[in-house]
Length: 623
Image (tube, rainbow, N blue to C red; front, side, top):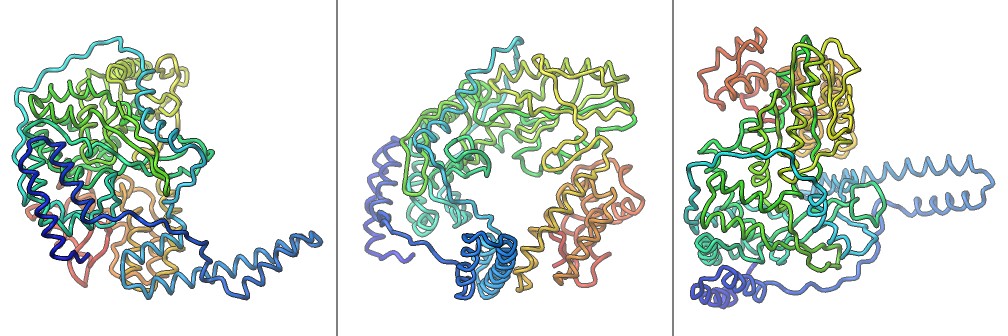
């Protein structure tokens, strides 16, 4: 975007009045209004005609007419169906060849991925909602508060000790904002103010100073500008249910880019404070640096012993992020040391939030959100794990493992009777904690697996007189765990998923792009939770990997077994775990390279397997 110098000068001069005021709302309104006035034009209404598929030839068009004629006459339906199947086959060949050629001749990686998404029909951005847009927006805005109003009062009172230290907000510098703008990705959508990331980047050298002034003013006054709290919702269909039902659409919240920059500044200061003071529970693996789903899965699986009486209850929280009570949230923040003006800032951040829904050229009215943590923000998830943090302080017989709101309870006992008594006791406590914190349990989706050697079906688990379903397997954080811990369903599921990669790989000719596609459609599935299930019977899975590597000529890829060994040692190194869980070969490798840094360890490890060079990326490639 080339902006004329005279326009830049006019815009720069128009911002001088910002420094005359000390009201965050007024100062930000001046900035956003000047950006819109100088750089944003109203979009023109363009009539888009229906686009014909470019791979459809004149011959195919003639064949389509013949096919339609055969079906209309209804004289020989067998012939008509045969003709239709042959025509579909030829159309698919033409379509595949068209996209193969388009992807090959495209020099832009983003365009290549967009073409691939179009070929695979995975681009679901278009919304086909058939109902009233204002009703849809009302549904999204009030779903949390309506659900929270139905939650009963807790029968138990929970008291927590107040944290001694208090949080302090350090000043935001122009350099900090400038560096954050540089890291913004251009493919992200605009927010409710219609200001794009591209524009922000182009005028970053001008706006960093007023932004720093406004952000610091927010810190000083404990006020978040109202415009930062307006979210535009882009609904996406869930591919199930009627198109006039708002509950069948997933709301994607879009916030102003400047609001996201401000939230990042707060996030870094809040997260640093929480980690420095060890406030977040070690049982929480969600939205935390150096923690992930695989570690949560391993933490749970390592507790299970098939020779003992033990079980796991997988708790399903209903719309947990949407039902967070703002008063309880603020009370918890104060307990954790967020006090004074900092607490006022978070109070302002949560209060008076609004949303509207946009579908095509239609935009709904604004509706107030009175419940839940903000969606589409980096700060929302962190506030949620802080909100749910005290559940780990409950005095339970069992142990909790959390990834944000995905919660599971592990219990063990001497016998079946004791196991089920302890479980029901813990669930009673947890249910009361959830009620006290305005969170609700989806009893119908809450399930458990009994891993005991002998299972007595006379015993049951109940919540509010509702019997919890006993299952043979459960998909926890994307990994299917079964009662035998052989991960057979997970391995079969992974094999099915990577076999589907053929359709994507068939249209990839360029070796560099083909490797990227192989990484996304094959290695990502093989790599996920591999340290948990990689020691099981993966013979068929490894054969499938080898077949795909050979068929599509993918070079420098780690075998499934070698990738598993690397991940296992990496896990032990990172978490300083007991070496007894490693095999003799893994222990030897660990001892040989234990003194090395993580990067050097990767390089030395790969030296055992690679004749090309010694580097490894997480997708399992040697570069």
